[in-house]
Length: 247
Image (tube, rainbow, N blue to C red; front, side):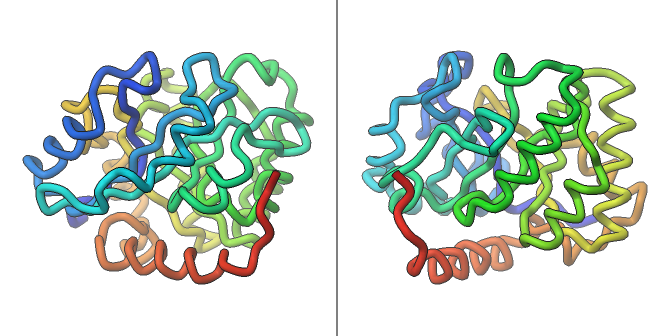
């Protein structure tokens, strides 16, 4: 498999359990040969999330530095079974180019199968959400078939997140099953490091190996090719011009 050209999930020290600045992340991305990087700090309702005005003002950040395209993004938290996320208004609808929606503690109990399934199904109705983050992680179980079919129906992307493999063999197996079913359904995926330190950017050996082992078609791995990813961002921008502002 060819190398990933765009890092789609990383945090800066605006998220208080991360340790590098935007500049440090971008500089490291340039050093390892990436062509693009998505800055995706946690939304404001997570315990260490950035305030809403941080996301509203991300357009102050340069579009490109060190030859690396900088995509302004967020990892929004899914807050309830109705799929509400912790970003709205200008931050969501005018400033951001890439939005990951993820489940984090403590909003959902680990054994709340029905609520987690409902949360994923509803959040995929949000036109501003691009990708479902780290759903292979072992903390929350859900109806995989319903959720992945909904992703196919709504055009959402599924993230294969390197950190999910840190949770042990059960999570690794769950990532395998999700990826295998995504392949069968022809769902686009991204490979991400979910880096919380600049030196971890581009570190997705296990995630990439998994996709290689199941022969995931490269044309459905969105961030392997910079031009393909950038075309998605431009198409997204054009599509969302007609959407209402979420308040």
